[in-house]
Length: 279
Figure 1 (spheres, rainbow, N blue to C red):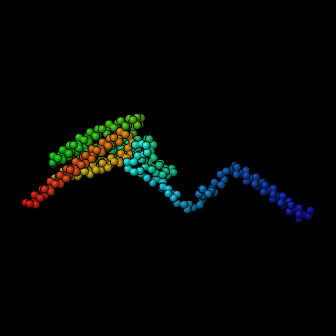
Figure 2: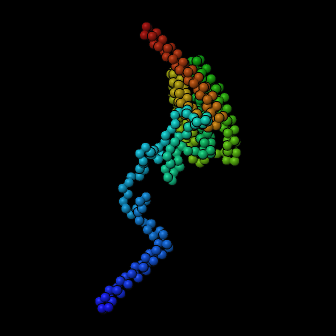
Figure 3: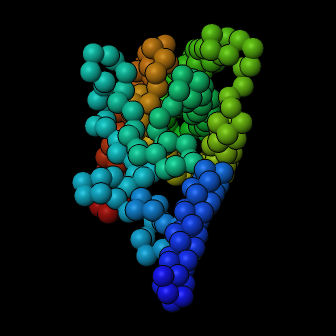
Protein backbone atom coordinates (compact mmCIF):
# COMPACT_ATOMS: atom_id res chain seq x y z
CA UNK A 1 0.00 0.00 0.00
CA UNK A 2 1.37 3.34 -0.98
CA UNK A 3 2.09 6.02 1.57
CA UNK A 4 -0.77 8.16 0.22
CA UNK A 5 -3.28 5.31 0.60
CA UNK A 6 -2.12 4.52 4.13
CA UNK A 7 -2.66 8.21 5.07
CA UNK A 8 -6.22 8.18 3.70
CA UNK A 9 -7.13 4.96 5.58
CA UNK A 10 -5.68 6.34 8.84
CA UNK A 11 -7.63 9.61 8.44
CA UNK A 12 -10.90 7.75 7.86
CA UNK A 13 -10.30 5.54 10.89
CA UNK A 14 -9.55 8.56 13.07
CA UNK A 15 -12.69 10.35 11.83
CA UNK A 16 -14.84 7.28 12.55
CA UNK A 17 -13.50 6.91 16.10
CA UNK A 18 -14.03 10.64 16.72
CA UNK A 19 -17.63 10.44 15.51
CA UNK A 20 -18.38 7.48 17.80
CA UNK A 21 -16.84 9.20 20.82
CA UNK A 22 -18.73 12.44 20.12
CA UNK A 23 -22.05 10.59 19.77
CA UNK A 24 -21.49 8.73 23.04
CA UNK A 25 -20.57 11.99 24.82
CA UNK A 26 -23.63 13.74 23.45
CA UNK A 27 -25.94 10.92 24.59
CA UNK A 28 -24.44 10.92 28.07
CA UNK A 29 -24.72 14.71 28.31
CA UNK A 30 -28.38 14.59 27.30
CA UNK A 31 -29.05 12.08 30.10
CA UNK A 32 -27.35 14.11 32.81
CA UNK A 33 -28.64 17.50 31.60
CA UNK A 34 -32.24 16.99 30.41
CA UNK A 35 -32.97 20.73 30.76
CA UNK A 36 -30.01 21.79 28.66
CA UNK A 37 -32.26 23.04 25.85
CA UNK A 38 -34.94 24.58 28.06
CA UNK A 39 -34.37 27.99 26.49
CA UNK A 40 -35.10 26.64 23.03
CA UNK A 41 -38.66 27.20 21.87
CA UNK A 42 -40.90 24.17 21.39
CA UNK A 43 -43.94 24.07 19.17
CA UNK A 44 -46.24 24.61 22.21
CA UNK A 45 -44.04 26.93 24.25
CA UNK A 46 -43.01 30.47 23.42
CA UNK A 47 -39.32 31.29 23.40
CA UNK A 48 -38.70 33.93 26.10
CA UNK A 49 -35.75 35.24 24.11
CA UNK A 50 -37.96 36.02 21.14
CA UNK A 51 -40.43 38.93 21.02
CA UNK A 52 -44.00 37.90 21.85
CA UNK A 53 -46.12 38.62 18.80
CA UNK A 54 -49.24 36.99 20.27
CA UNK A 55 -51.42 39.43 22.24
CA UNK A 56 -52.33 38.37 25.80
CA UNK A 57 -55.72 36.78 26.45
CA UNK A 58 -56.07 35.46 22.91
CA UNK A 59 -59.17 33.32 22.76
CA UNK A 60 -60.37 30.59 20.50
CA UNK A 61 -63.32 31.26 18.28
CA UNK A 62 -66.50 31.05 20.34
CA UNK A 63 -64.56 31.30 23.61
CA UNK A 64 -65.17 33.68 26.49
CA UNK A 65 -62.75 36.29 27.70
CA UNK A 66 -61.27 35.34 31.10
CA UNK A 67 -62.98 37.26 33.86
CA UNK A 68 -66.01 38.20 31.75
CA UNK A 69 -69.06 37.73 33.93
CA UNK A 70 -72.05 36.05 32.37
CA UNK A 71 -74.98 36.27 34.79
CA UNK A 72 -77.96 33.99 34.56
CA UNK A 73 -81.47 35.30 34.09
CA UNK A 74 -82.77 37.16 37.18
CA UNK A 75 -84.61 34.76 39.43
CA UNK A 76 -83.43 31.69 37.49
CA UNK A 77 -82.62 28.60 39.54
CA UNK A 78 -80.31 25.67 38.99
CA UNK A 79 -82.02 22.56 37.56
CA UNK A 80 -83.63 20.45 40.25
CA UNK A 81 -82.95 22.96 43.05
CA UNK A 82 -84.23 26.25 44.39
CA UNK A 83 -80.75 27.73 44.37
CA UNK A 84 -80.13 30.80 42.18
CA UNK A 85 -78.03 30.40 39.07
CA UNK A 86 -74.53 31.63 39.98
CA UNK A 87 -72.62 34.12 37.91
CA UNK A 88 -70.43 32.36 35.36
CA UNK A 89 -66.90 33.46 34.57
CA UNK A 90 -63.82 31.95 32.98
CA UNK A 91 -60.90 31.72 35.33
CA UNK A 92 -57.80 33.84 34.80
CA UNK A 93 -54.71 31.76 35.72
CA UNK A 94 -53.41 32.82 39.11
CA UNK A 95 -56.57 34.72 40.06
CA UNK A 96 -59.71 33.71 41.94
CA UNK A 97 -62.54 32.81 39.64
CA UNK A 98 -65.24 35.44 39.73
CA UNK A 99 -68.61 34.27 40.96
CA UNK A 100 -67.53 30.73 41.90
CA UNK A 101 -67.97 30.71 45.68
CA UNK A 102 -67.52 27.87 48.10
CA UNK A 103 -69.85 27.33 51.04
CA UNK A 104 -68.07 29.88 53.22
CA UNK A 105 -68.23 32.40 50.38
CA UNK A 106 -71.99 31.97 50.09
CA UNK A 107 -72.30 32.37 53.86
CA UNK A 108 -70.29 35.58 53.62
CA UNK A 109 -72.80 36.90 51.07
CA UNK A 110 -75.73 36.10 53.38
CA UNK A 111 -74.02 37.63 56.39
CA UNK A 112 -73.26 40.72 54.29
CA UNK A 113 -76.87 41.17 53.16
CA UNK A 114 -78.37 41.09 56.65
CA UNK A 115 -76.59 44.22 58.01
CA UNK A 116 -77.62 46.04 54.82
CA UNK A 117 -81.25 45.32 55.74
CA UNK A 118 -80.58 46.52 59.29
CA UNK A 119 -79.17 49.83 58.05
CA UNK A 120 -82.15 50.38 55.73
CA UNK A 121 -84.62 49.86 58.58
CA UNK A 122 -82.63 52.11 60.89
CA UNK A 123 -82.82 54.90 58.32
CA UNK A 124 -86.60 54.59 58.00
CA UNK A 125 -87.06 54.68 61.79
CA UNK A 126 -84.84 57.76 62.11
CA UNK A 127 -86.61 59.71 59.35
CA UNK A 128 -90.02 58.53 60.53
CA UNK A 129 -89.39 59.88 64.04
CA UNK A 130 -88.39 63.24 62.57
CA UNK A 131 -91.45 63.39 60.29
CA UNK A 132 -93.86 62.39 63.04
CA UNK A 133 -92.72 65.49 64.96
CA UNK A 134 -92.51 67.99 62.12
CA UNK A 135 -95.17 66.73 59.74
CA UNK A 136 -97.82 69.32 58.90
CA UNK A 137 -100.78 67.17 57.88
CA UNK A 138 -102.32 64.38 59.92
CA UNK A 139 -101.94 62.08 56.90
CA UNK A 140 -98.17 62.58 56.80
CA UNK A 141 -97.86 62.28 60.59
CA UNK A 142 -99.80 59.01 60.58
CA UNK A 143 -97.70 57.68 57.73
CA UNK A 144 -94.49 58.60 59.56
CA UNK A 145 -95.67 56.86 62.72
CA UNK A 146 -96.54 53.80 60.65
CA UNK A 147 -93.01 53.82 59.23
CA UNK A 148 -91.54 53.90 62.73
CA UNK A 149 -93.69 51.02 63.95
CA UNK A 150 -93.33 48.73 60.91
CA UNK A 151 -89.61 49.27 60.44
CA UNK A 152 -88.89 48.90 64.15
CA UNK A 153 -90.63 45.52 64.10
CA UNK A 154 -88.75 44.48 60.97
CA UNK A 155 -85.49 45.80 62.43
CA UNK A 156 -85.85 43.64 65.53
CA UNK A 157 -86.71 40.58 63.43
CA UNK A 158 -83.69 41.14 61.20
CA UNK A 159 -81.35 41.53 64.16
CA UNK A 160 -82.66 38.25 65.58
CA UNK A 161 -82.10 36.56 62.23
CA UNK A 162 -78.55 37.91 62.18
CA UNK A 163 -77.86 36.42 65.62
CA UNK A 164 -79.35 33.06 64.68
CA UNK A 165 -77.54 32.74 61.36
CA UNK A 166 -74.22 33.84 62.85
CA UNK A 167 -74.49 31.14 65.51
CA UNK A 168 -75.37 28.56 62.88
CA UNK A 169 -72.69 29.25 60.29
CA UNK A 170 -69.90 30.85 62.37
CA UNK A 171 -70.08 29.54 65.93
CA UNK A 172 -66.31 29.90 66.38
CA UNK A 173 -65.64 32.88 64.15
CA UNK A 174 -68.76 35.06 63.84
CA UNK A 175 -67.07 37.65 61.65
CA UNK A 176 -67.04 37.62 57.88
CA UNK A 177 -63.80 37.15 56.02
CA UNK A 178 -61.62 40.32 56.12
CA UNK A 179 -62.59 41.36 52.60
CA UNK A 180 -66.33 40.87 53.20
CA UNK A 181 -66.11 42.74 56.50
CA UNK A 182 -64.29 45.64 54.84
CA UNK A 183 -66.86 45.80 52.04
CA UNK A 184 -69.68 46.01 54.57
CA UNK A 185 -67.92 48.82 56.45
CA UNK A 186 -67.76 50.77 53.18
CA UNK A 187 -71.44 50.05 52.44
CA UNK A 188 -72.42 51.06 55.98
CA UNK A 189 -70.44 54.29 55.67
CA UNK A 190 -72.30 55.13 52.44
CA UNK A 191 -75.67 54.47 54.13
CA UNK A 192 -74.79 56.72 57.07
CA UNK A 193 -73.70 59.52 54.73
CA UNK A 194 -76.97 59.27 52.78
CA UNK A 195 -79.02 59.28 55.98
CA UNK A 196 -77.21 62.40 57.20
CA UNK A 197 -78.00 64.15 53.90
CA UNK A 198 -81.68 63.17 54.15
CA UNK A 199 -81.88 64.46 57.72
CA UNK A 200 -80.28 67.74 56.67
CA UNK A 201 -82.74 68.18 53.81
CA UNK A 202 -85.70 67.60 56.12
CA UNK A 203 -84.31 69.94 58.75
CA UNK A 204 -83.98 72.67 56.12
CA UNK A 205 -87.51 72.13 54.78
CA UNK A 206 -90.03 74.69 56.01
CA UNK A 207 -93.57 75.03 54.67
CA UNK A 208 -93.00 72.21 52.16
CA UNK A 209 -91.83 69.64 54.74
CA UNK A 210 -94.60 67.17 53.93
CA UNK A 211 -93.86 67.19 50.20
CA UNK A 212 -90.12 66.81 50.78
CA UNK A 213 -90.61 63.89 53.18
CA UNK A 214 -93.16 62.03 51.04
CA UNK A 215 -91.10 62.57 47.88
CA UNK A 216 -88.08 61.23 49.73
CA UNK A 217 -90.09 58.21 50.91
CA UNK A 218 -91.16 57.36 47.36
CA UNK A 219 -87.56 57.42 46.16
CA UNK A 220 -86.23 55.48 49.16
CA UNK A 221 -88.86 52.75 49.03
CA UNK A 222 -88.45 52.26 45.29
CA UNK A 223 -84.69 51.96 45.80
CA UNK A 224 -85.14 49.47 48.64
CA UNK A 225 -87.63 47.42 46.62
CA UNK A 226 -85.15 47.10 43.76
CA UNK A 227 -82.35 46.32 46.20
CA UNK A 228 -84.37 43.53 47.81
CA UNK A 229 -85.00 42.02 44.38
CA UNK A 230 -81.26 41.81 43.80
CA UNK A 231 -80.66 40.51 47.33
CA UNK A 232 -83.15 37.70 46.76
CA UNK A 233 -81.23 36.64 43.65
CA UNK A 234 -78.03 36.24 45.68
CA UNK A 235 -79.21 35.03 49.10
CA UNK A 236 -78.96 31.29 49.76
CA UNK A 237 -80.29 30.90 53.32
CA UNK A 238 -84.00 29.94 53.28
CA UNK A 239 -84.58 32.03 56.42
CA UNK A 240 -82.93 35.05 54.82
CA UNK A 241 -84.93 34.65 51.61
CA UNK A 242 -88.10 34.49 53.71
CA UNK A 243 -87.12 37.71 55.50
CA UNK A 244 -86.38 39.39 52.17
CA UNK A 245 -89.80 38.37 50.82
CA UNK A 246 -91.49 39.79 53.90
CA UNK A 247 -89.52 43.03 53.63
CA UNK A 248 -90.36 43.32 49.93
CA UNK A 249 -94.08 43.00 50.56
CA UNK A 250 -94.00 45.63 53.30
CA UNK A 251 -91.86 47.95 51.18
CA UNK A 252 -94.31 47.73 48.28
CA UNK A 253 -97.21 48.52 50.63
CA UNK A 254 -95.39 51.57 51.96
CA UNK A 255 -94.47 52.69 48.44
CA UNK A 256 -98.09 52.53 47.28
CA UNK A 257 -99.19 54.43 50.37
CA UNK A 258 -96.57 57.15 49.84
CA UNK A 259 -97.59 57.54 46.20
CA UNK A 260 -101.24 57.97 47.24
CA UNK A 261 -100.32 60.63 49.79
CA UNK A 262 -98.27 62.43 47.15
CA UNK A 263 -101.17 62.32 44.68
CA UNK A 264 -103.61 63.60 47.32
CA UNK A 265 -101.25 66.44 48.21
CA UNK A 266 -100.92 67.36 44.54
CA UNK A 267 -104.71 67.53 44.24
CA UNK A 268 -105.00 69.71 47.33
CA UNK A 269 -102.27 71.99 46.05
CA UNK A 270 -104.02 72.33 42.68
CA UNK A 271 -107.24 73.20 44.48
CA UNK A 272 -105.50 75.85 46.54
CA UNK A 273 -103.92 77.35 43.45
CA UNK A 274 -107.34 77.53 41.74
CA UNK A 275 -108.84 79.28 44.74
CA UNK A 276 -106.02 81.77 44.80
CA UNK A 277 -106.42 82.50 41.10
CA UNK A 278 -110.14 83.29 41.54
CA UNK A 279 -109.50 85.91 44.16
